Image (cartoon, rainbow, N blue to C red; front, side, top):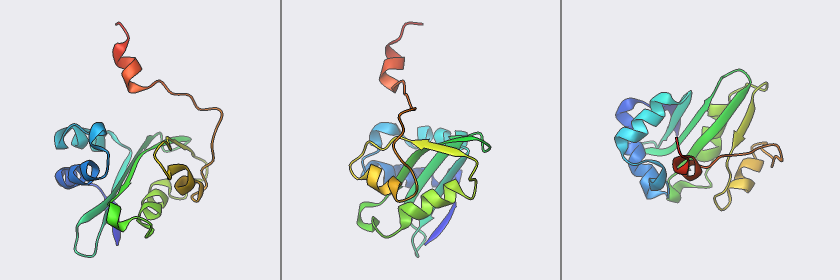
Amino acid sequence: MQIRSAAASDADAIHRLLCANGWAHRVADAAHLGRLISASQQAVVALSADGEIVGFARAIGDGISNGYLSMVVVAEPLRRQGIGQALVRHILGSGADITWVLRAGRPGAAEFFAKLGFSPSSAAMERPREQHLRMAP
């Protein structure tokens, strides 16, 4: 398995991966996903031995103090083989000075991220997307 930066030409394959693995609601189409990737500080893909994209992760942050791990997705048949962990470790790098946050609402996510050093926080708050859309200008 190889991990590399996501390229603009990967958008269609990443979009198919996301849609096939429960993330269709987050990416309207490949063009929208392309904008998300280009706006991310980091976006990486995991490639199988034959070059197929089998995993994707992206993060945003300042690269100095704070980071947000936005997406970690691995193709269902290849889960529990270390691909997700490799993607997260690649994103996190060796920046021990960065506080990373994420949302772990999917089944099994809290346990997965705990193995990578994440722990629940009582300090985090969020303003969900839908609430923001309903607010008057």
